[in-house]
Image 1 (cartoon, rainbow, N blue to C red):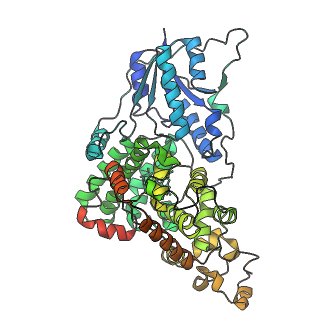
Image 2: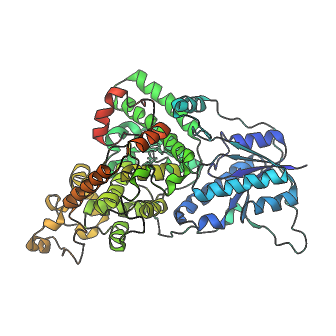
Length: 522
Ligand SMILES: Cc1cc2nc3c(=O)[nH]c(=O)nc-3n(C[C@H](O)[C@H](O)[C@H](O)COP(=O)(O)OP(=O)(O)OC[C@H]3O[C@@H](n4cnc5c(N)ncnc54)[C@H](O)[C@@H]3O)c2cc1C
């Protein structure tokens, strides 16, 4: 009997998994994950992504075995791997979640779809978030999101029939590269920077995070999310689990709403109620941003607002500035500390991500494309739809968002007043007291000696005068805007991509205050 192939991609769970349930209802199930060498050669891939996926696959295999199924982890190009499985098993249908990935996965999905059409195999793709494929208008988007998140979680039918073992390759045919889940490749991806603080993959780790966030850690989420010292504890830290689908967004939303309702009825103005309201907004934003890439895939490499083409040099970045930024050696201590934490942990909070982009795009005046790929490699939670849209938004190329040129010294004083975070990530500044640590370039030579540091030797002089650089960036943008007619394209971007509805956290009358806080401007 021909098999129902379940193609796992960024949905590494069995709970609330519509493709798996549909396959199980239709016939013998063949669960497959394909390691695609072409994908792992892309410039936005990293060993930390694979390490998280690898752990998640091991757990997925265990969960599938409880259903009597065995995960096949195969290596090769698609659709070639499917063609060979078809020759061996006979595939009746392929079931998968829709994916809004990068240009490479988009092209691969198209060639899989073309192959399925040619081979007469049904390809069933199901939405996994609130992202709507073929969306005609943004006006009704929020309603779609709400309906999907409120829908009951998908249940598995019983009994489940497993596909028979793979028939061995015929004579002369190279066997498919097949990995047992316990012996998956160690490292894949272009960036191999060690990431000792990386979050653990797998559904169990995700469930633990969700539980501890809703029970204890989330109480001061709203107050603590902006500082990198508190954010690592008070933020949910669910992003990588959402990105690789070890938890479904729907199950997170539903669990969170039960908790939010209880918090609101107990004390509507409590820290808990306020924090969970802010969290709800972010769960919307997740899909709101991915929807933009779904609707306009070129956001990955082209300015969203075409009127900003030519604003920055597109032919590559200044290598000295880029190296200083990427290695956490700009001489701006708070910026460098953030970059170093990110490299070490694979995660940093939203505001610090935005600041790192602002420094690269405004103060160092680099085009966003190469830095965006660099940060994609450093984020364990890399999600193309959020990533490129946020990157462009923080670089001022969307035409509809407020410019946010973060002042790195102000951020440093606000978010790390005592300098403890800087001292932790930049050992050369470990003995510099709070009065000087935010701007060590002001230290007189005598004090440098007292604090055991020599600028230019132990820690770099600033790569730019940040105040002067910010002024110049503002002037360049002003001059660019004055030289172009940007209005029509801005209207197009707003019509196609801007949020229509007030979010739970942002009734219309509050929008201005929120913009001042620098976070809400979608
Ligand atoms: C330049 C830049 C690049 C980014 N790239 C990514 C990325 O590749 N992957 C990614 O998941 N997030 C990205 N973000 C958004 C955000 O910073 C992270 O989602 C968040 O820091 C993850 O931590 P958390 O899970 O503890 O988030 P929480 O604050 O606990 O939020 C819960 C969830 O809401 C979603 N979310 C939170 N903030 C945002 C936001 N601003 N926009 C969209 N969704 C949001 C995420 O899925 C997150 O896991 C980026 C932000 C910036 C400024």
